Length: 415
Image 1 (cartoon, rainbow, N blue to C red):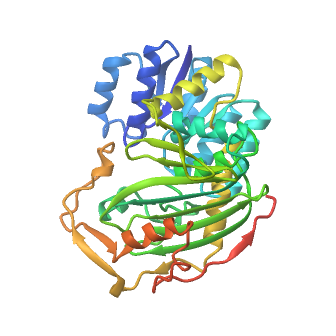
Image 2 (image 1 turned 180 degrees about the horizontal axis):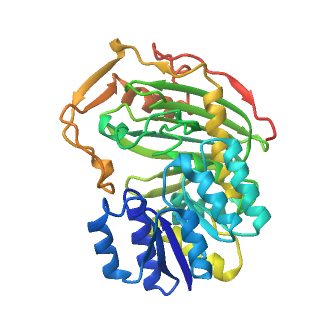
């Protein structure tokens, strides 16, 4: 049984704590210690937590936790913000602990590769929490790709429209930011809320069962309608070394919630995947439906922890680890390099709607609801993005949207 130390007990850590509790019930782990910098602020939460873990030990810093706990903590859970991932992962790995770090791996390629190097030199495990890789339907599609059941994979396209209001961007110091102090974050749909789906495209296009694809060329477009530093509307197109083309268009500047949905195109057919309704459909080269399965009823947050813990017991790598997750960070960095800044959506192309709540922040007890909160919407974005997807995964510029600007195509240099 693996002893776990967790950094924080509020915000997204609540999801980690629920998963740890479930895995403890399976006899896989126990929660030994937590880092809480301000115990008074979380007094009520800590009291509730100790109903399950009466002997839970609290420390003000990760270093003190690791120094004091010794072998009682074999795995460190990092549910903290993107800017802290590298530092906490390196500290934990260099002191001989395994790590489960929340997605995405890091803000920069340099940070992600430093985490990967720390994992390799210490011979420990560094899992990354891209939980949708664990979706049973994604695993079935990967199996079909590897077996060549529909021929060679040619392309994957994805689209998503997820409403996010000004409340979402007020949730912490780096939300909607390119930097947080000296650290690059690149907070944006593809880096954060919709990061899972770019990761799934990279994973499905990977050259082997447990690899993700590392693109050799990347094209990008970045826009913002909200009053933020970073992007809330993005497009990326990647080409892999094997010639597979991946495209992904996404926005938070919408009144709609649709997707993600994606399509895999093969020499001998295609596969469509939709999160809403959970249907995966297989078609042959003539467009006839030849198979269908659902996404499965798997508790994905828990499954990330369960796989990480079982991997430690079995001496193998977890399904999602730094070696097949850092490619996502490469894509994000080149996506931002592909545009000269973040392009503004003009006032004439957007509307502002008052909102009373932000339904996507239910896990956080620290979010204050602003009575002046708004949802900023790009006029006509929903129909435009439907057409972009239907026309093969076009970019906003290629679709002829009046506010769109062409990005650049960059060769990805070995890092």
